[in-house]
Amino acid sequence: MSERKPATIAVRTGIETDSQHNAVVPPIYLSTNYSFPEFGDVPKYDYARSGNPTRTQLETTLSDLEGGAGAVVTNCGTSALNLMVSALLGPDDLIVAPHDCYGGTYRLFNTRANKGDFQTLFVDQSNTEALDAAIAKKPKLILLETPSNPLVRVVDIAEICQKAAQVGALVAVDNTFLSPVLQQPLSLGADFVIHSTTKYINGHSDVVGGVLIAKTKAHADDLAWWGNCIGATGTAFDSYLTLRGIRTLGARMRVHEENAIEVLKCLQEQPLVGTIYHPSLPEHPGHEIAKRQQVGFGAMLSFELNGSLEQLKVFVKELKYFSLAESLGGVESLIAHPGTMTHRAMSDEAQEEAGLAPTLLRLSVGLEDSRDLIADLQQAFAIAAEVK
Ligand SMILES: *Cc1c(COP(=O)(O)O)cnc(C)c1O
Image (cartoon, rainbow, N blue to C red; front, side, top):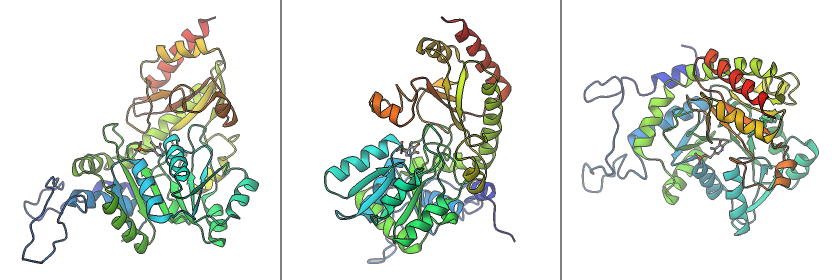
């Protein structure tokens, strides 16, 4: 049989594996402890921080989806990043991370570097000169986040992995914005993949979770040891809900993207819309790379409102099907104003330097009927246009 496609892996995980009652969908194991069959005979599972059958099921699924040798499911995405740096880096080791990485990632790396745990260098990874200079410092690890938040900048994973290999650096990719259905970094040369499973993988905005997937068995075993050591592992109940969510990942990503394309068409016709940021647009600087390395363009996009902050406030307030909220990747459509929400910890100057205009808005396009989403945007734009 040919290799299974991502949607099939996601739907079929654990189906018909219950040996006790032949349940089609696997049961959840909530027990924290497991009995030893004989004195001194250590079972596969003994204590749930170290291992739990429901979490193993999710780890296998995510590892299979990304083409890895193993995975550790963690209690959040941040915890997966923390597990990675705890396991891989010592005080003399350098990690190179994107200057526009997820805010929590920036805070984590910066704080731990200030404590002397390891060294961190933040660079604009779309600037080849700056990136080459950083790689010349022989980092132990390079973190990529592509597409990035909120301007969906794209970097060339395969090219950076080749440059990293020349200095013996490992490469990790935060693949949260696309999911393994739309991008598989290990196949492009990366050593690790990270997800905040809070986003598309669970997809229903009701679980906070994460995963760290390794390409080699040696790394996977090492990370499993560290996950238990520092207590980063996820709970059975969260794993169960995430498994429930992941079964529809293939279908969800397809509709997310279809809806995003319809929303883009609508935005392009609006006089109140300035620059639009989405890798599907030919004028987007990462368009060609995205076409090569991604299976689709994803459903995260941003745009600048061509108007006043007053108009922006009215526009956001009048929307009925785009909730004003942080996070992303759920079935429900969301709108965020990075300046006062996700990126509010950055100073005005830092925001300007990162290219975040004061009227930038970010959309996570959900799974509502796209006709309703478009009608909603149109009516809100019409009302905002009347504001002086
Ligand atoms: C949300 C997010 C994280 C952090 O994940 P949590 O589950 O909130 O800890 C990391 N990277 C990206 C790209 C994210 O969107």
